[in-house]
Image 1 (cartoon, rainbow, N blue to C red):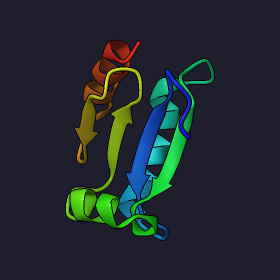
Image 2: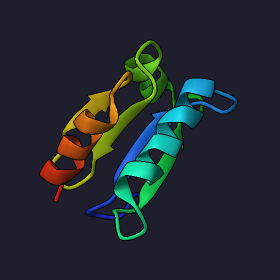
Image 3: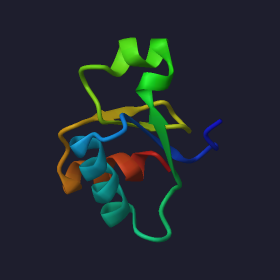
Image 4: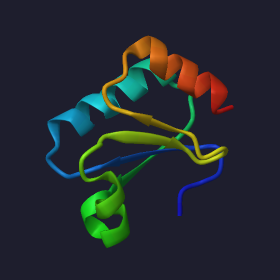
Length: 84
């Protein structure tokens, strides 16, 4: 179960875009940023149906807002600021 205040990355194993989104998250969030919980959408039929064509997706666990790829660093910064 993802922790409150963390960010969830919905993606797939061996997904280059998902890897890029994860790297960008860590670059922008920095060492004091929120935790990142990774979820493989292939592990759940409902997640697969919802996110199949839009991954990678970041979701703020605190408020439920989502950010779909592609996102530039500036948009990710805004998303993380609103997630606090």
